[in-house]
Image (cartoon, rainbow, N blue to C red; front, side, top):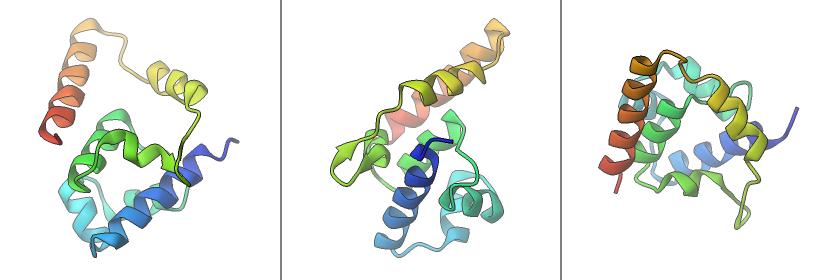
Length: 109
């Protein structure tokens, strides 16, 4: 298993703590459970595209900032491919998911 997911979780936790937010507060702002956020922060699971975008918005950062580990952007090619593979195959559901993601990204700017 790559170390991207644990690094991402650590980065999310760092940003949350820098903003003096609790897991409950961030999870509520994102629309996930505290347990799900805990799993993400501890590297046990990666966020969905939608959750990733909502985390960036709730933390008031650009999405790329979540991937900025030690001043270097993570190499995410394989992980992006895995996330793309989890997108819906139904064209309407895919359009809805992409609209939601883009809406979340635009609201974060």
